Image (cartoon, rainbow, N blue to C red):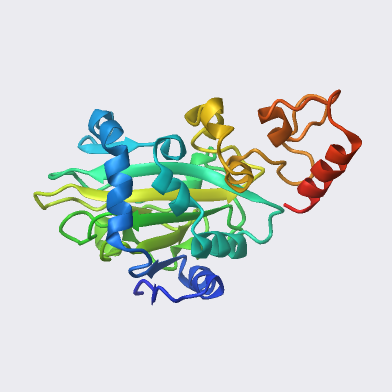
Length: 286
């Protein structure tokens, strides 16, 4: 099956519908390539300092640079892209809330081998989530053109509906080719993997994933983003990072304080009644 392709004018419901049918979708040219070039420039010191992967799965000639909220203003804007958040909300609508799961630039170097075909939700200790119950909605932004030659992510459309753990060959996959500025959406249950890079250029992709709030984040946002930086971020982004209760009571601090109040140094003894009412309204309005 081909990968569904949508224009930049697509609605969240249209993208979510494609994900429900095939487990993946490409929205072409959603942002100008210059926006992702700016993110790459902001991240250059960390990209250059990141070591290559220690094993075949992470890629022995692939660099994975995280901590993007702390390191790049532009990445903060990408993380909160309206089409993305609208799509994630639609895909994970069965959960009370969702959160940022991982932020990472994946730089696949020349002569890199293809990655094992896998499901991202296997990160949760291979827990067998019910077929059709999605716990992740993932994105890869093309910072450079994605081609079959340079290692475009390879997918098996429709594989999100398969039960059990399967093994696939590269021949059973299709490449998510797309021009820079485009975005690939895929669910945590979709079988996929990085392709082999047979070009002489690095393939840069911005991998940002989201998951239901009752699961542990793959990237620890509280330590990846130092508290002094976090305190300067808007509440909407902080909530997305996990500074909010998941479901009814998950993630509160000490005397049932809201995580945002704890970050801002507001204690239970110095909160006025009006502030308590506002905090309650904030939790209910998530």
